[in-house]
Length: 227
Length: 271
Image (tube, rainbow over all chains, first blue to last red; front, side):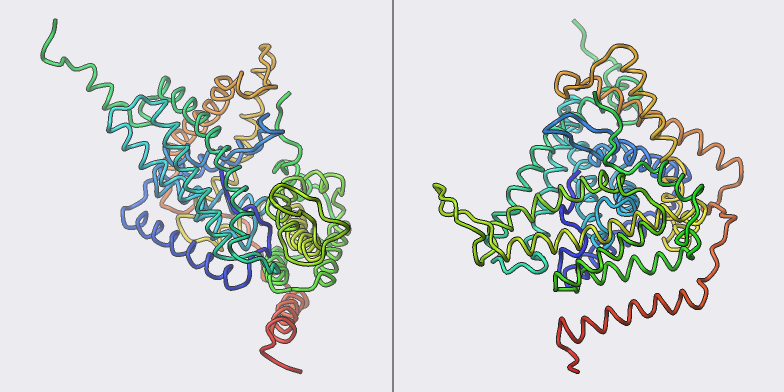
């Protein structure tokens, strides 16, 4: 999961206000859509426990480059969908900020980044499945692209905002942030592959969870022409 | 061996400190602590002098100690915030224009040196970040589970509050599920020391965690609907309004920060 790798107070006040407003705007749209569509109990339960699982997974230290942590935001998007995925991103960020990971003032920016990851991963996954891709490449590709979109957005937010107290021109700041974005893109590939394996595993035990029931039913039906 | 990380705060330990310890901070009203977090975010955003930032950070460290919380754990929990600071502020320390500290190192791309301005920026960013990290942890480690749930229920709009309350409730369950799965895999002789060689094992552990979560959510739906869930999880606790002296203290914090910003930082008001 990419998120703003800057601590509290790293953005000037105007940027804090801007990204908070954009984040609130995004979540307001999501909440409006959820309320308008009439949220079901199962959606609330899935989002709540999905966020808890995502938060729990973050506690696991993966032995890559000395240890990395993942929230599997792309996977949450694939499983929960774009609207619930965005809500899960917000809730996970609130809990992370309360534990000193992330930042209270950057909740808007971080939610924007993570919601983008979940939303992009969901739509790419559905598109690739529609193109008859296999589950592993579709989910791995979708998660990698979603996480990459989040990493690039994260870099863009930092460059647009500037760093509080820094006199560095934007061009030089872009160079400094590019390294961070590159590192996140590397993690995105690893997380994407891991997501692919997880979705493959879930599809083998509960194909309905990843929307494969119709596809399998279709495959079982006679094609009309046999040898 | 891969285990659950000790440099990410464990919500179970944090809740244990909140529930079973006592200190002056435990007796402060949760709304007051919530208000102070906001004031600190504003302070570290507008403050532009290293001395002030160091002072505020030192004050939060003292408050953390007064609450009887463990400094050793705090040092471990600083790992990720510091990593984040280093990942961006590290390059900035070299790129920031200014006077080099010591000599410059010749590289094929040009001279490389840490400047005084870059080092000060690094120190400022560290103080800004660690101040709020320290106080956020202090607040969560001195506020009881029921009170945090009440604050979540009161401050977030529906249905985010419902999702947050379920997340808070089931975080503990999911961590234990994940921990049990890791233990079970290790007990069966698996090695998790290398990621790529064990990628399928990792996928099974994480997949099973999510599957457990989803199946638990399906059972939860039945139980919620059986109890007549209508979009509102009833909270029986109550967090009263802060006492007057705490309210005055919070308002004073905001007045001081806004006043400082208007006079010393933005120069909107001259004295």
